[in-house]
Length: 162
Image (tube, rainbow, N blue to C red; front, side, top):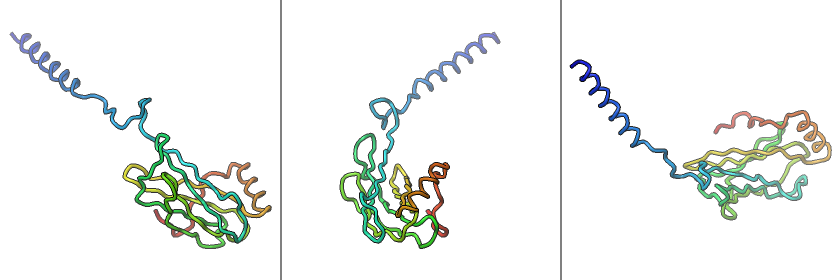
């Protein structure tokens, strides 16, 4: 009699667990055709001609699974000299095409600079950055930094908060 109760209880537990497991299925909504979650690709672009004192157009092309991504409610660029010789310039990014944001800025004195894009949407927060150099000495310095493995992210200037 005791064995029957244990068997009945075990069967009930097993049946309940089976029903719970049968109700749990993987959420495949929002996956691409290969079963992966969507992801962004970014291409941070520098002006074709970078010269001291001249304006240049910096741009970023953002795609989600190969399609232009326009979901940012906050999109801005920040530009600063890595030696801290002047304050960073921050400006709202202009949407110039589907998935493309840009910023026009004159470049200061010769040196190594960093450009950073900050984009915030309901699904993503991205902050890609890229170094570039103005002037032959700065180009050589940047090449040495990259050769030495110093191409890792450099923190934004002091006082900058996200």
